[in-house]
Length: 270
Image (cartoon, rainbow, N blue to C red; front, side, top):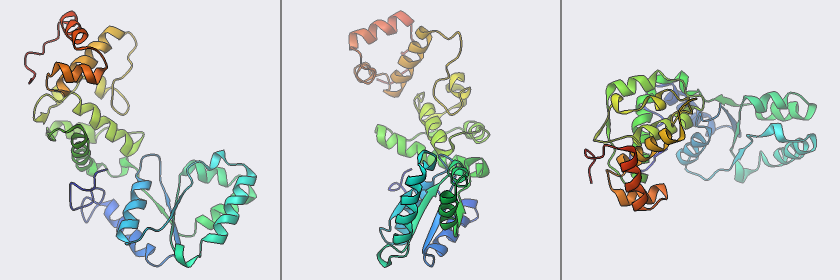
């Protein structure tokens, strides 16, 4: 998520938003508590929140990322518990930000050591809301992701047609912010002008779970190749040399493909 393009942090949105209220509570608690835990589903922004909290608190306080407890043996859990108990109250490491998810919690409660570890970590616990709990903030995330992606691609960020933002807002993203980011990337790959329009986004993008091309039964490899070539030509504003380089093929081969598929590239900028 972008940090340098705007003075305000994109995740806090507005003073009245759910994430803003939780953020303020986290800051207040972090200045007093010895440690806190952050819980959230995949892509909800746990790692990002940790970095923001460190920055807001003005220190490089350490964080522990436990996102794969279910891969740990009983012996591993005992080592983690012992290590944690020896470190958690050290004066030079006042706050530890611990990251976990629901699967980790279920796994920990299956053994005595796991339960003890869970009890240790669960004293001060905050749950990060998933994206479907903050749908009103999705249009803002779309704009911020668009800026970040276009900056990387060295392009000017487009405006978004209200109808597009409304349809994105009503989607379900199983991977939360990760899924939304991928979806925004997919939409931008089909950008042909200064505005993202709903009629310019292919149905294959809308029909997929989190963006990108959907693998549709009966859709041939040739059809996918045609879509991919056209999308990259649009991305490169019709520049054949740059498109060929991006696709990893020769310019001569690209010209042959354009003629073979009878692609209408006359309206693209060169």
